[in-house]
Length: 519
Image 1 (tube, helix red, strand yellow):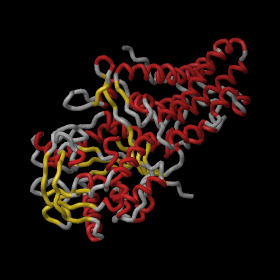
Image 2 (cartoon, rainbow, N blue to C red; image 1 turned 90 degrees about the vertical axis):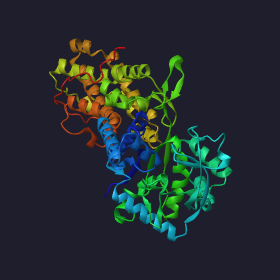
Image 3 (tube, one colour; image 1 turned 180 degrees about the horizontal axis):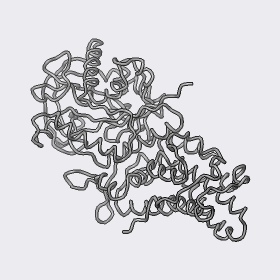
């Protein structure tokens, strides 16, 4: 029996500058979902990559002294790949828009849409923001400034090619009515639905004159134009899995199950992208999830958006080198609900790691393994009562845990999934205080066997449950618990089973997973 497929994507990251914590947030969330779905028995295809065309990149390469724009892109791409390795991002494919598999398919798609009369040549007159690479109509502009970034706009008059998105406005509105979970969180769905209902869609300008911009995919029907970077980049979601190239593979993978994006690029993904795939006769993706931004704390406690000009970018590499990849992963997924903005401060970071990972999780791992080593010469004790039924206090928490986590993960509520797991961790730590194994060691050996077996089994469940979120730490603890295999190859359903761990299995106390951070 073949596995069900699960196809998820991140946006393509623009290589005009080095990666920052915002990029990390998206990829950590996507990686957590990918790992979770693999452990749930899915055949996962996790796609990420880089967007390498457009005016901003051409300008950035010149500012850096590169004559060859591609060499500039190569340099920045390596920094993304290194960061994903540092953060344990388990992507299955990495696409660059300068690859031939992408460029050639984009040209085929342009020809196809041009032949279907979905693309036409017309005059463009209006405002253009080079940093955002976005056109704006006069009604959207105030004081000649970009509605998104606030920077000055350039007025442009030129011949360009347009995509007939306006004729699909009613189709998209109907699609949204019939698919209320297409855009999440709900606030973003409401935002897009209200916009489409209340505004007439303009056709999308999808080209640039070569005389103004040469760094782009040439349009197959005009030697004087290159393809607009946003049209080019969105198509990666179908070029990578093999559209018009590996049709059998593409049919297996499409539609995408989740597109992870930041809220600043929602309109491209929730309006233009579904219309583009509809024009091509394809089913739209199943979900577009627009998460919030990480803001940075200023003096006095106020939050500010990160920007290079303000010099307040949080570099994820510095955080990982100072603490750990799992600490950063956990903080980003636990601190705020996925979808809302979060504020990053090192003080909040340290408090979260000390409270949850050091005091709760790390303490449970260390105390359980230490007691097995001390009382049983590192061997998990045998308790028939423990194997067969376990303590009722854990049955209550474990019952329905897998379902509750699935309910949270199906709508990308990573915070709630962690909260569900933490209820079991805290109950186990409380259990140690209640049962006082140090007293049972002197007074009741049979009861001590029962208590310690329960703790070992709970620890097994906790490690599997947390494996998608903090993969490195759970792998270490898994080996400390005496398992020789890869925790990520286990099925997630094992958190619903009891009595799996083998009596006599030899454990190792190991090193504390998350030592308390001293401020």
